[in-house]
Image (cartoon, rainbow, N blue to C red):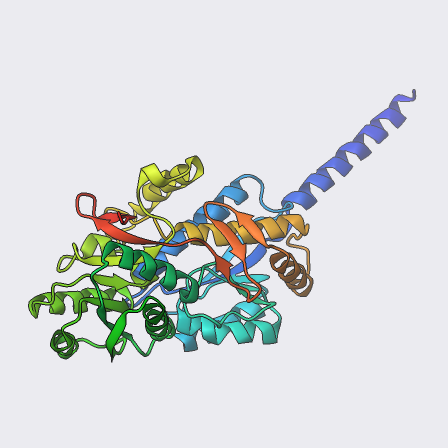
Length: 391
């Protein structure tokens, strides 16, 4: 063969391969929006979920990305406020995100869900508890709502405390998940023949809980059901202790995440919650143990998180990110896919999921919410962490 021709052919092949390699390496990223409270009283919750989401994304990016593109998280602080969440969601859409993870509070999710459908941008929630606020096809939630979780928790509570007959329900009437949780507690109590003596509500920004505790004391209940975020629950438990109210307290999943088990003092031996995962190594699958080990190693570096690290609720955020990544891979979406086309394909992919297994096993319902079997959980005083309650 003519050496000049051979050299020319080799050069052309090398140039072609180099061009192919460069085009694969130079693919633009896939933008995914993340709305979390990175300031305010919900910051610990935001940090809990941010670490889990970043773990899921870092894993796939280090392995080469999705279809040759890296995932770029566009993370913004919504402060746990619905107005901020709406504003930032619109901004993320204008910046070209193909999907949104969050927001996490029920009030914010209730505001963003209809907007996601109006703007035709898929959003995946993994924490909000209020029933009926997910809006198919664009706004889905993989976390079970309180209409699923509360009845399962109350049923186990009654098994543990069969002598309880009269209950008082209390909670945050201004937050969507808080208010809906109180309603679900009332419904579950009625079905189990418990007498709801009264409902005593407060607001998210309440600072003095003595009037609430005094009123509850006067009602003389056998137990108290509470639906509020951790800071509110901690303050109320302390005041109930001051007032001498020593009855068992069952809270919905709003206190499950974050620093509640590590920081609660007053009433720690009488407080129960509802969840589908704990910090017990003996209850974890091998995959969950691996996640927990890596999560703790990362979270312990965060000065904003109380130690020991509460792993239990973080897994659902990791699963949400993994579910979205799986759809991106399946639909062959990369950074060159137009945002509009990517959003359409992601929405189709998410709505096609009926059963999904990650760290948690999720069964998607027709209403756009996921179902995971829940149980009553309690605090292990030795480790200051959640464990399944012994019935």
